[in-house]
Amino acid sequence: HGAYVNGNPIRVSQRSTEQSIVVFESRTDSRNDFAYAKRLATVVSASRVAQRVLFGYDLALVAHGKVEGVICKEPYEQIWDIAPGSLLIEEAGGIVRNLNHDTYDPGNLDVIAATPEVYRTLRAASLV
Image (cartoon, rainbow, N blue to C red):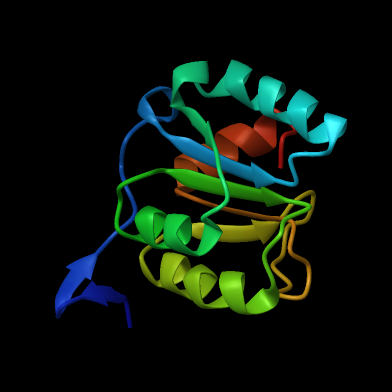
Protein backbone atom coordinates (compact mmCIF):
# COMPACT_ATOMS: atom_id res chain seq x y z
CA HIS A 1 0.00 0.00 0.00
CA GLY A 2 3.02 2.29 -0.22
CA ALA A 3 5.24 3.97 2.36
CA TYR A 4 4.27 7.10 4.27
CA VAL A 5 5.71 9.65 6.69
CA ASN A 6 3.13 11.60 8.67
CA GLY A 7 0.47 10.61 6.13
CA ASN A 8 2.53 11.76 3.13
CA PRO A 9 3.74 9.19 0.59
CA ILE A 10 7.49 8.65 0.22
CA ARG A 11 9.45 7.05 -2.63
CA VAL A 12 13.00 5.98 -3.19
CA SER A 13 15.25 8.43 -5.01
CA GLN A 14 15.32 8.79 -8.78
CA ARG A 15 18.95 10.03 -8.87
CA SER A 16 21.33 8.29 -11.25
CA THR A 17 24.01 5.94 -9.96
CA GLU A 18 26.64 8.62 -10.65
CA GLN A 19 24.82 10.97 -8.25
CA SER A 20 23.99 8.30 -5.70
CA ILE A 21 25.08 7.91 -2.11
CA VAL A 22 25.61 4.32 -0.98
CA VAL A 23 26.18 3.38 2.65
CA PHE A 24 28.23 0.26 3.40
CA GLU A 25 28.24 -1.47 6.76
CA SER A 26 30.42 -4.34 7.88
CA ARG A 27 32.45 -5.46 10.81
CA THR A 28 35.50 -3.22 10.80
CA ASP A 29 37.87 -6.09 11.55
CA SER A 30 37.50 -7.79 8.16
CA ARG A 31 40.11 -7.19 5.44
CA ASN A 32 37.74 -8.61 2.82
CA ASP A 33 35.21 -5.92 3.67
CA PHE A 34 37.81 -3.19 3.15
CA ALA A 35 38.61 -4.60 -0.30
CA TYR A 36 34.88 -4.76 -1.06
CA ALA A 37 34.42 -1.12 -0.03
CA LYS A 38 37.27 -0.11 -2.36
CA ARG A 39 35.63 -1.96 -5.27
CA LEU A 40 32.29 -0.35 -4.43
CA ALA A 41 33.94 3.08 -4.57
CA THR A 42 35.02 2.41 -8.16
CA VAL A 43 31.37 2.02 -9.23
CA VAL A 44 29.88 4.72 -7.01
CA SER A 45 32.13 7.75 -6.65
CA ALA A 46 34.43 7.27 -3.64
CA SER A 47 33.15 10.53 -2.20
CA ARG A 48 29.66 9.04 -2.18
CA VAL A 49 30.37 5.81 -0.28
CA ALA A 50 29.91 6.02 3.48
CA GLN A 51 30.90 3.31 5.91
CA ARG A 52 29.09 3.33 9.23
CA VAL A 53 26.96 1.33 11.65
CA LEU A 54 23.43 2.79 11.62
CA PHE A 55 21.74 0.30 9.33
CA GLY A 56 18.15 0.65 10.58
CA TYR A 57 18.28 4.42 10.18
CA ASP A 58 19.95 4.12 6.78
CA LEU A 59 17.14 1.86 5.55
CA ALA A 60 14.66 4.61 6.39
CA LEU A 61 16.84 7.10 4.47
CA VAL A 62 16.66 4.92 1.35
CA ALA A 63 12.87 4.63 1.60
CA HIS A 64 12.59 8.41 1.99
CA GLY A 65 14.86 9.09 -1.01
CA LYS A 66 17.71 10.66 0.97
CA VAL A 67 20.33 8.04 -0.01
CA GLU A 68 20.18 5.54 -2.85
CA GLY A 69 21.45 2.36 -1.27
CA VAL A 70 22.70 0.54 1.79
CA ILE A 71 24.75 -2.64 1.85
CA CYS A 72 25.13 -4.73 4.96
CA LYS A 73 27.87 -7.39 4.84
CA GLU A 74 28.72 -9.45 7.92
CA PRO A 75 26.89 -6.91 10.08
CA TYR A 76 26.57 -6.21 13.76
CA GLU A 77 22.78 -5.99 13.30
CA GLN A 78 20.13 -8.59 14.02
CA ILE A 79 16.99 -9.53 12.10
CA TRP A 80 14.89 -7.00 14.04
CA ASP A 81 17.20 -4.20 12.88
CA ILE A 82 16.84 -5.03 9.19
CA ALA A 83 13.49 -6.69 8.43
CA PRO A 84 11.14 -3.73 9.22
CA GLY A 85 13.18 -1.29 7.12
CA SER A 86 13.35 -3.77 4.27
CA LEU A 87 9.57 -3.85 4.02
CA LEU A 88 9.48 -0.04 4.13
CA ILE A 89 11.93 0.19 1.20
CA GLU A 90 9.97 -2.25 -0.94
CA GLU A 91 6.76 -0.29 -0.26
CA ALA A 92 8.61 2.88 -1.31
CA GLY A 93 9.62 1.33 -4.66
CA GLY A 94 13.08 0.02 -3.77
CA ILE A 95 14.68 -3.40 -4.03
CA VAL A 96 15.87 -5.54 -1.13
CA ARG A 97 17.94 -8.66 -1.79
CA ASN A 98 20.48 -10.77 0.01
CA LEU A 99 23.98 -10.30 -1.34
CA ASN A 100 24.67 -12.69 -4.23
CA HIS A 101 21.03 -13.82 -4.35
CA ASP A 102 17.97 -12.86 -6.37
CA THR A 103 15.71 -13.15 -3.32
CA TYR A 104 15.42 -11.76 0.21
CA ASP A 105 15.51 -13.98 3.29
CA PRO A 106 15.28 -11.93 6.51
CA GLY A 107 17.37 -14.56 8.29
CA ASN A 108 20.33 -13.78 6.04
CA LEU A 109 21.75 -10.47 7.25
CA ASP A 110 23.99 -9.82 4.22
CA VAL A 111 21.66 -7.41 2.43
CA ILE A 112 21.45 -4.71 -0.21
CA ALA A 113 18.55 -2.28 -0.15
CA ALA A 114 18.59 0.25 -2.97
CA THR A 115 16.84 2.05 -5.75
CA PRO A 116 16.22 -0.12 -8.81
CA GLU A 117 18.93 1.70 -10.81
CA VAL A 118 21.61 1.39 -8.13
CA TYR A 119 20.74 -2.25 -7.58
CA ARG A 120 21.02 -3.05 -11.30
CA THR A 121 24.34 -1.20 -11.59
CA LEU A 122 25.89 -2.92 -8.57
CA ARG A 123 24.54 -6.30 -9.69
CA ALA A 124 26.08 -5.82 -13.16
CA ALA A 125 29.41 -5.03 -11.48
CA SER A 126 29.14 -8.27 -9.45
CA LEU A 127 29.09 -6.33 -6.19
CA VAL A 128 25.75 -7.69 -4.94
